[in-house]
Amino acid sequence: MVRFGVTGGIGSGKSYVLRLLAARGIPVYDSDAGAKRLMRTDTDIRKGLTDLLGEEVYTADGELNKPLVSAYLFANAQNAGRINAIVHPRVKADFNRWTSCQNAPHVALESAILFEAGFEDTVDFIVTVYAPVEMRICRVRERDGMAEAQVRKRMEAQLDDEEKCRRSDFVILNDGSKPLEVQIDGLLQILGKMEKAKD
View 1 (tube, helix red, strand yellow):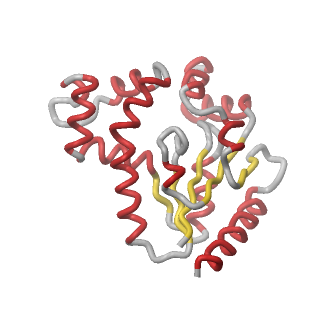
View 2: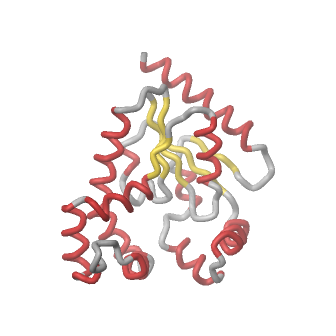
View 3: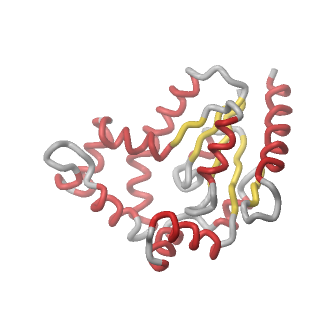
């Protein structure tokens, strides 16, 4: 089994690419959904977040106070690092458990912050979905109704896309210049060769 990570900045089209991969039968682990679930249910994470942000990090009914966490998380890279250090070791363990239950030649780990969260040592191969900054801003503003300044602030909290591309094994260019399906075909050929080499 080849475990590959798929990353990309906000508005890059990463989630769309992963839907295309899932449509081809590749199991996809959504690390963001996993992190959100674990922040609600994992006692070690709950303790770590409460120690970091105070009792108000969880509401009276035990739900995560998302506005508080988001404000802290996106304030600066140091804050994001503190939260990542609490949450992402548990997400890695959850991904490893999930992977052991899959019966497929390849599985994908979706993570916008793959490098920042230290997931590169959890996967065999890394794919970045790349789109130009202005295109990403337009996509996010249209999709989420965010102000441009808010989108830029979120982008600044993530690793620079050019750096992600440099550290990746494969880059999918999502700017409309080359069909995504053709690029995914190329990716799957590489993954197929990797799977055969492991046998």
